[in-house]
Amino acid sequence: MEVLNQAEIDRLINSLASGATSVEPQMGEKGVKVYDFRRPNKFNRDQLRAVHMLHDGFARHLTNLLSSMTRFMVSVEVANVEQIPYEEFVNSVFSPTTLAILEVSPFGGKALMEIRQSLVFALIDRMLGGQGLPLDETRECTDLEQVTVNRITRRIIGELNESWKIIQEDIRFHLFGEESNPFFVQIVPKNEMVLLVNMRVQVGKIEGQLNLCFPFHCIEPVIERFNPQEWFISRDSQQDPKGRQRLRRRIRDVRINLTAELCDTMLTLKDLSGIREGDVILSLIHI
Image (cartoon, rainbow, N blue to C red; front, side, top):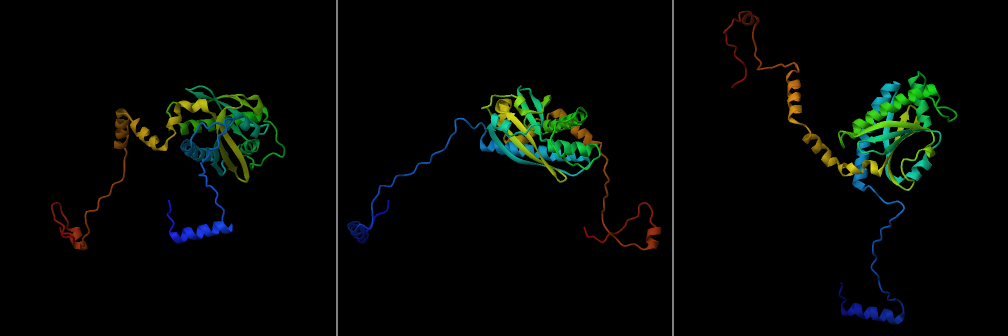
């Protein structure tokens, strides 16, 4: 509280008497946090940040995979990670699309992986010897094209499994089914919150999206493990003694080139030609 002196009090009284200043009670403003009961948050900021870091690694693996499959420069990066109602995700998906239904093991439940058709046809064109050009009109894949799409999808799921091993070793995503219309896929109620990972894929000049949709109940058993600080600790603790011995044996059998240089000295050709076993060579370094 600030204390006024007599001169300040007199000036305040004079200003009130002249009407130049009005006294209004000041109410302390309380911070109000808006909460939407229709969109309850299931993940905190640290967990969302951990999900982003996890799929950054997945994006790097996917970059190498798609580049080798298409023999072309492919760039993959995480564009956004957010939690939204499942209905909002379905409404954001264009039809037709390539929608893979993933079974989450061992927890049960279904997740989704959506690949936009513009990206799908660019990948197919590159894999079949084309330049990776998109189609003029969006359509569903033919039976022959679907064989190539299945191959791409299964390879991507394999990389996703490898990336999620850091959360839990036995987590697996299995291809359960495929669909082209998102409104025919109802893995959770429409108001259920899901975790959406939006990834941007660049194939030459063609840019497309790959979306991963994880319902909360599928990853709830391991939600507390989305902590990067514990990932490296748990990885070290999971190394059993047999694994360490196996690693030592493999390192022991590795052959390497070793060169040892003791010192430098100066010799004449006469001295060098007369060297015999047992001779002492003087170095220029004092020990």
